[in-house]
Amino acid sequence: VQLVESGGGSVHTGGSLRLSCAAPGYTTCSYNMLWYREPPGKGREFVASFVHSSGSTEYADSVKGRFTVSQDNAKNTVYLQMNNVQPADTAMYYCLGCGKWGQGTQVTVS
Image (cartoon, rainbow, N blue to C red):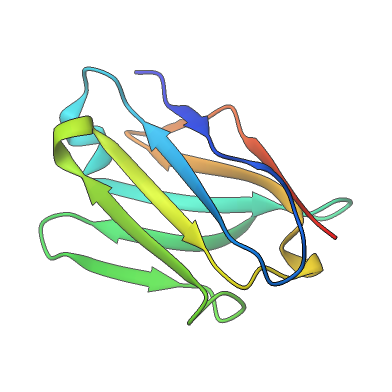
C-alpha cells in the first residue's frame, strides 16, 4: 500500500488549502484515515480522523471549526479542507491509513 499526498503549498493567513491522500487500488485504506502534522522543531501531532463505517470525524482542538475531513470512495481518497489557516498551522502534513504513512506535504502559512 502506498499513500500519495498532495495539495500542500504556501498560503497567506486566513486563506485555504485542500490536502488529498489517495490510496490507489486500495479502497479500504481510505475508510479509516488520520491526518497528523509535524510543525518545525516539534513532534508529530494529531489533526483529524475519519471513520467510514460511522461517518464520524474527530479534530484536534486547535483546528476545530476550521478544518474538515471528508472522503471520496470512488477515488479512494480522503481530503483535509483547511480554512482560515494560521501561521501555527505551518507544518508537514501526513496521512495515516492501513498502517502506512504518506510521504508528507508541506503547508506554509505566512
